[in-house]
Structure formats: structure tokens, C-alpha cells
Figure 1: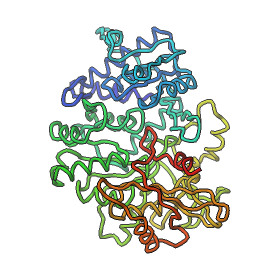
Figure 2: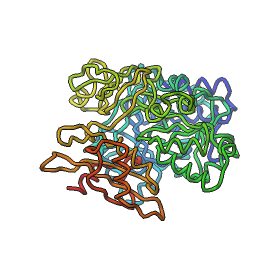
Figure 3: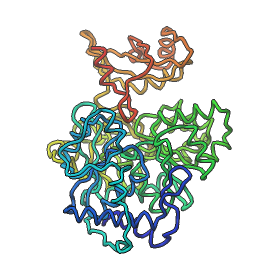
Figure 4: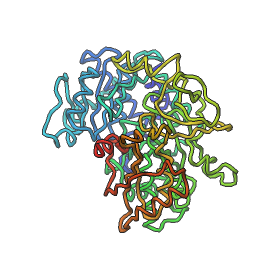
Length: 511
């Protein structure tokens, strides 16, 4: 099994079908995409690469990104995508740990720090003349064979965000990604050959992985000219090339909705620009998705997964998000949906024993999407995968209909006076307060209670928040012992390069 066969299959079926777009401009048909990958595979083999060797991509979103990924797979290699927002020194650590031989870069992200990557045989700027030479296409290379790989061979070496220490390399196999691609059609969305996936979120992460199901369907792959997320640009591009599909973190969804509201766009106009927005990667609060549905309409699907089970865990479908007549609609809206088709989900206690419905415990995932393990880290692998089950570190509960509701990461749970308090429950309440833009709740050390609840709150522009009113709302909605003992107003919450709130930094501020 080699994922490059997916590209070869599409190229043989319809070589002239538009495949890769830069904005509205077609830069590669499926036939050209496959030819370039085959030629790049020859370059790798000529340089002495062996199956399983690693190639790093330290790039902003770029039209050559997918050509490099599938060219590496064509040659039997594994790719190491690195978030372009990382510092060069952070990228260097990943490259060294992965033992990558070559790195493909966009010069803008390496030149900013004034530092160069070292320890590599070759560093290629994808916009350079050297890269252009690599992509020159001699006609004789069209039939370059694809290197055989096993289903459990490494395809994508993904490094976790490392908010509590050095990142770990998640070994994602060809089987893992094939499972994810096929599961997309079952649980996330249908895909038509005329659809277009827009890469506004980093291609080094979930957005890039979603290239696989869209390739399976022969859809178009579009990199916006900005190379990232610009709501006005995306709304305009959708109008020109047809409604877009994209993967987005909740922060991006919020900015899309803000733009639609500010421009006074109707639900119909939003539908002309967007077909599907699959969101995940961080909590989406019920108030935020309700607003998104009200303004933009039924464009949304929620997915839950981890780097260790890429994009595959649970899904909250378009139907479930819209089913307002269901008696448990609000509870479902606050959930992350039901287990995706390829996996099983359990909720267990600290000893790995199944808990009754409704009780909170650790979420476990089992299935062909679960990683092979952590790169060069058998101890962490043994801790994360036990008896074939991935211990996610997320706390949640299942209901009788199979819907999973996340509470928090296990490390974020607050224990105050012997009682467990889940920050998300408090955050959901505070987000309903007028004038509140963002909230993060953490525990602060306390000599009497062990920990007390502290809420960091970001006001909406132009609003002056009254913490007494926030406290009154909490007393009205949740148990007294859960309410924050302190409110801290901030201009912005600290976030990592993936848009996730850094609660470790908030705890550090309290300390």
C-alpha cells in the first residue's frame, strides 16, 4: 500500500482534470501533478534515498506542497511536515530528531530569524531556480514505478505541539491515512470531482491531511494567493471557483462568521462561497456554533481526533447540528458527536475500566487510524497505547445515544476541596455573558482548597466587563463551588502556533 497510487489512479483516469490551483489559476492538472511527483521521485533515488528515509517540509502553504508530499511517497519516503509558524530553532530540533536528509523550505520563514537549518544534505527553497530545475519534466519519466510500501510503513511523521515539553514524533502510516480518507466519506462529507478544498489552515496539519479524501474524489486543491487565512479573500474565491471546503480551527470559524456578519452577508451568499467547513483541533463552544449556524447556515461539521489518530475519532454531522427539533439538541450541540465509522470509543477510569454512561473518564480510541507509535520513544508509546487502545488524555463522557462530550484534558481538570471541576463547563457559561469574546479557566494553587478557579476573560471590542455580573451569571447557571474565585481581564489569550490556548502560560502567570 502506497498512497501515491491514489494520485496515479486519478491521473490515469482523467489526466486533464484541474488538480492544483493558486487562487483561480490552475497550476497543475492531475496528469501534470503525477508527472512532477514521478520526476521528483527520480531525483530522490538519484540522490541515494532509500525507502523510509525522511524529507522535511518547513514551508508556508504553497502550490508545490502536495507535489513534494506525493513525490516523496512515490519514492517510498516519509514526509515530516513542520508548522511554518515555528521558530527555525524549533524546526531544527524536529529535523534533527526525525533524522531528515533533505528539507524543502520557503525562504521567507527561514530568513526572518536570520538563522539557517543545519545538519541536512540539502535545503531547497521551493521558489528558487534550483527547485525549478528539480521540477523540469523529461518526457521519459512518466512511467516511473511507485516504490512498494507496506500498509504499516511510515508515511507522515507529525510532531505534536509540545506545549508541555519537547514535541513527540507521531508515526502515521499509509494505513492510518488511507483509513482517514475513506472514513471522511462515511462520517464527514460527500465530495464531488468539481469541489475545491481551500488550504487556509496549515497544510502541515489536518488541512493537508484532508488532501487525501479530496484526491480520492478527483477534486481540486486550492492554495489562496495570501498563503493563509483571509476571510474576505476566501469568500471572494468561493464566489469565483465554486463553494469551498476547508478545515478550520474554531478561531478561524469565528473570524469567518465575524466577516459574514460585518458584511451583512445572507445565508444564501455564504452558501455560494462555502460548501463545508470541518472544524476541530480545539473546543468549539455551543454559543459559537449556534451563532455560526444562524449567520452562515448549514455549512459545518465538527470532527474530533488527535495527531495520534489523525482526524479520526468522532464527528458531529451536519444533520445533528441542524436537528433543532431533537429533545437533546442542545446537549448534542455541546458534544463532539459519535464515533467515526473506522474506530471504537470508550470512556474509562484510571485503571482502564469502562465507566457507566454519563460518568466522566479518559477517552480511549481503537482502530486502523491509530498511530504506529512515537518516533524513537518506546516509553511514551507504551504509555499511550495499551492493548491496542489509544489513551488520549482527554476527559469526557458518553450518553446513551453514543454522543461523546469532552470536558477537558486530564491535566486541565481542577480539583478544589476534593471536588473535580471541568473548566469547559464554566467557560461555556461565561461565553454567554454580554461583551465576552474569549474565556479560559484554570486552577490556581491554594493552601486551603488545593486549587481555586480563576477565569481569564477577553472583552469584546468597546465593552467594559463587570466581573460582578459575570459572577452572578455563574451563580445562576452552575454550582457555587465551581464559580471562579477570581476574574482576570486580558486583551488576548496566549495561544500556540495552532491557535490553541496556552493554559500552561496562564498558570505560569498566576504562579
